[in-house]
Amino acid sequence: MALYLIAFNDEWVPHLTMEDVRERGASARAVIKDMTTAGVFVFSDGGLDASTVVCSVDPSSGSPVFTDGPFVETKEHLGGFAVIDVPDDAEARHWAGRIAVAVGWPQEVHRFPSGQVSASARGED
Image (cartoon, rainbow, N blue to C red; front, side):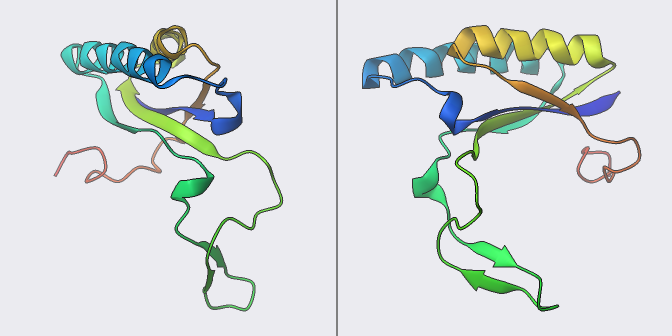
């Protein structure tokens, strides 16, 4: 089994009414329920945008310097994600496709490098 991140940038989300948000949220929760039933669900969260940024951290001085707000030179930022534990890329693509269809916007799939995830992160201790 391997851990995969399924994520989207907030800028990929079209303008939605509150009713649209509720409907797509319900669709996404149904996919998460299916992931849980299949035993592949690890964690997910969403609703991230510029308003949720707590701070930025700059390590260039050798010590962390914390500043309020997002000051990275980019317009893109993480909007939401799910972490799944599946046997291969094909299974990760399957679940990413289910999420993309449920919410109606693109998703990216990233495989965490083997050996990079601790046993505690995988719930194995």
